[in-house]
Length: 396
Ligand code: FES
Image 1: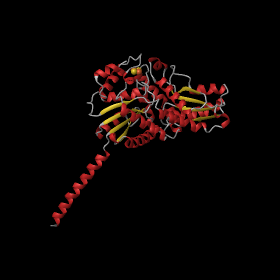
Image 2: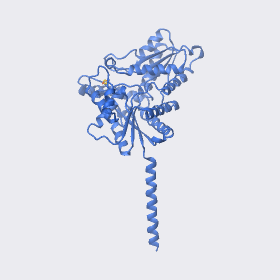
Image 3: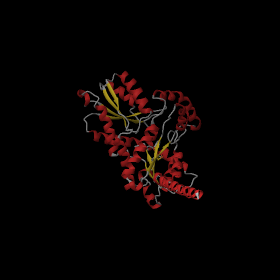
């Protein structure tokens, strides 16, 4: 009798447990993946050598003669200097921390805004440090998502940055069957109104730190990672997309201050897009302009170029030496609520009006001769389910 009651209760308990497990799996199983592409940054100084090696051997990012030998050599040579910089900003890059937080806040917002595609889950897909793009793709496949939105976290498109991350996704699926997931792509969003608003807000925060007597004269210097002139001449759209972000931000700001777009972080001996940020600070100081704000306009979270290059090298060293009276650096968007709203707005518009992949992305730079770019564009037509007829019209 006792053993029968025990058996019945046990059976009941097992049934209840399995029902609870099924229910919790149903609740937690993500329906829509948000794949957040970015270059990433070393979280510890130990990751620096491998990070540099990956950058220096990525031909989408940088083209060097005899790259397979020269790339590793440059990575080794620069390793100690770069490690020192990461040590000076606290021992590692905060890109992962910010991207993860942005992803969590974004998906929480999307779950409320778009119940039809919920639950949403973010997947961090870095190019040069873990978690790598292929890990993110494996994870979303094993989670069994129904659709995946590949969402570049570089607002302005460049073949060297977003293009490189997208090529790495094409590489991943080269020898694998495509999963039964509806993929689509957001590769640029630098002119989004809410993004412009958050940049404007970051500038306002710093303008308020200047004395009223000089506030209207403060020079607003938007600064973005430079690009080799070779890439600019090839037709990379990055410079004009960054300029569009600057323009959109100034429209939101509605202030009488002068502004300029300048370029930072050049590497190597070849010519890059100018004027360089440090040269501009010195030149303006010489002309008598002593109040400035630096605004990183092409990156959505703090990283080595904001925390070291702008804060330490330019604001602390270059500006002081040049005799600048006051220089401030606007914060990156990070977790500003308007920025999270911008991310959600971009995804919502994408889901409501598309397209799955833009004609702008499918067209190539006028002087691009790279077979890798050609095959990558073809791959995205297939991945995002663009029909041949429609695709014919999209190719420039
Ligand atoms: Fe721009 Fe190939 S380099 S599409």
